[in-house]
Image (cartoon, rainbow, N blue to C red):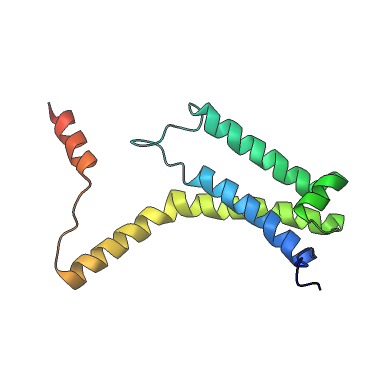
Length: 139
């Protein structure tokens, strides 16, 4: 290995890079929570288009990128079974993250909040926009 040019082209780095791409992209989908700060994904077409394009590019880099892309991104050769495994891992990550965000995150946050309140003895400060929204809906 030369000191001027690091040797980073290997299957571990390729797998880590491609699986991380799926994680980052799909985290954006899962954490796109909606109001009051973000629009629903169906209405937010730039976001949806960006996610779709990023996923297509990532799947392309997994399945069979052109030689120049492999060289540019320093991707190593992978067997088809391994390529399929990376795609399945991306889907599994999305499923687990979505289930956690949809069904478990709020419960966990509430449990932590209650525990913190019991330990410190101080009540939680409510978000101002929620208080204002509730006040607006009263009238």
